Amino acid sequence: MLFFLAPAVLAEGLPDLGELAQVEVSPQLERRVGEAAMRDIRMHDSAYLEDAEIRDYLNRLGRRLTAQIDDWHGDFEFFVLKDATLNAFAMPGGYIGVHTGLILAAESESELASVLAHEISHVTQRHLARMVNKQGQAQLASMLAMAVAILAAHNNPDVAMGAAMAGQAAGIQSQLNYSRDFEREADRMGLQLLEKGGFDVRDMASFFERLQKFGRLYENGAPGYLRTHPLTTERIADMENRIQQRSHHQAVDSLGFVLVRAKLRAADGSPEAAITDFETLVKEHRSASEAAAHYGLARAYVRDKRYDDAGRELAQLRRLKLESPMVETLAAELSAAHADLPAAVRTLKAAAARYPQDRAITYALVDDLLADQRSSEAVPMIEAGVLAYPADPRMRGLQAKTYAAQGKLLAQHRAQAEVYALQGQLPAAIEQLQLAQKSPDGDFYLYSAVDARMRDLKAQYAEELARKKNGEDR
Image (tube, rainbow, N blue to C red; front, side, top):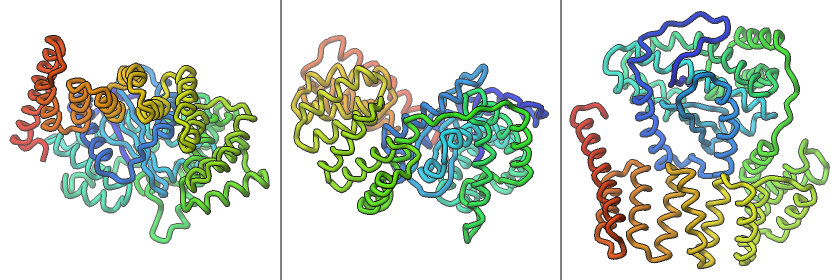
């Protein structure tokens, strides 16, 4: 798919494809449309994978690449959709989605990084912004139509094209003529990001070539990624030529990469099939990573509620002396499954001290503390989590749950208001603040803060209604 945001950066040796009034579609406009699309995905797309460990791994990998971009002022957010097809896409504002099928198809971390680097380069080169600017008129409507098309495309690229055509008429077709130029530009910029990020640049061409060969096996055409990113022999040859001109080194896969792939594989198909698959890998030593084989088997056992068997695999992981928060959350989950919440809490508290920014640990720790009726201990944990991730609806929801357990009504309603605000449900957020105003456990400063936030949300809602009245959000 095509993406945009931020100042254009010319690819190495590639002439400018045209400024096309880049400032006409502002980053603020892109972000606003992207945020609306992401709210829709989170709330209504059943494929959206609410797994903090997989999401945070993908974002760490993405940040390793975006850190290589000079003069970058925009934000990226990477998210995962549970979908076996090979696809990746981005929404306006730097939101990039990756299908689980693509993650599993990557045989190395550099291969996965090569796709992210390509997508990131579409964003930094403002390819979608160029397409929208070409219209010259009704740009917000054009961008919204493109967002609808992208939302549809992760399941069916043909439906997506129909959505784009319906929203923007035949003009979209002429803009798609730029796609090959855009793809070459993203290839070249992506290769630079891959090299600067310390990945193996050879894996970009090899993965794209394997995707091309895999596409020939499809009865009804290429997989989604190839249909939205036209892949030609000329493009692969160009990548290979550029790689030959670069010095490269073999990059070692991170532990996070192999564990995330094992977790996804363990969740695929039936528990029995996953267990058989991983038991074979362990017995025959067929896995490139012993840690991944034992971790995947443990996860498969947990799915089948065979907790004692999972515990034996955890013991194997401990013997390997792995340093990973994913192992600690597995250990805590097994303790909780054996009704030993104090042990789960001890494991998670120790892990939180070692991995203070890990959201999966914070989620699990707060949940276990509340389940063990230790809400007072959960307060500092959740407040630190909200401070680190203020735009995380799940973190805000846990905050509301923690305050509810303590009987702190005003704080509970304030936290729940932020959950609704992040979800774009402004009337519900305002209603929660009205309940906070009526709560008997506040003081002058707390009520004043509630009033100020109420005025802010009411102003936002008035702007939203005005835009709808003017037809901007049709």
